[in-house]
Image 1: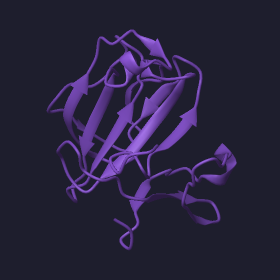
Image 2: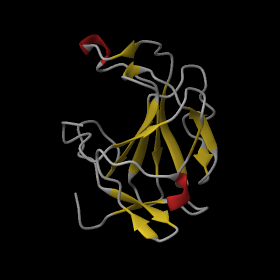
Image 3: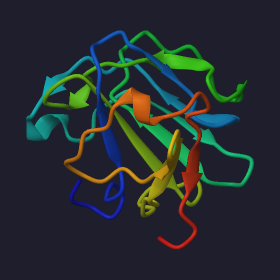
Length: 151
């Protein structure tokens, strides 16, 4: 993640077809579906499947590299934390199946990502690039919290 738009994005390795759930409640602003290209090729840089959800506080969360044809939400849907929104895939510039997750201060292209935390069983967990985290570290809520001190 080399650009401001993806600097604090986090990738979660998962097999194709793994159910992806909303990490927070919100309203679906955008659904991109139909991309079936995959691999590390420059022609795949701006092709992907994704869901963007706006939180009640205004921030948006983008879920990227979802499986084509596996979306479970539509634009305008209101979702709850834990609700299935799609399935993990490998669409777009993607070396292997994974979920790419980004938090933005609001809707719009070219907006810098925010650092975020997961509510873990031992407190807040701020994911860092290159690190691996186990499911056991997260509690049942798994909700994302924005870090107010980073932008």
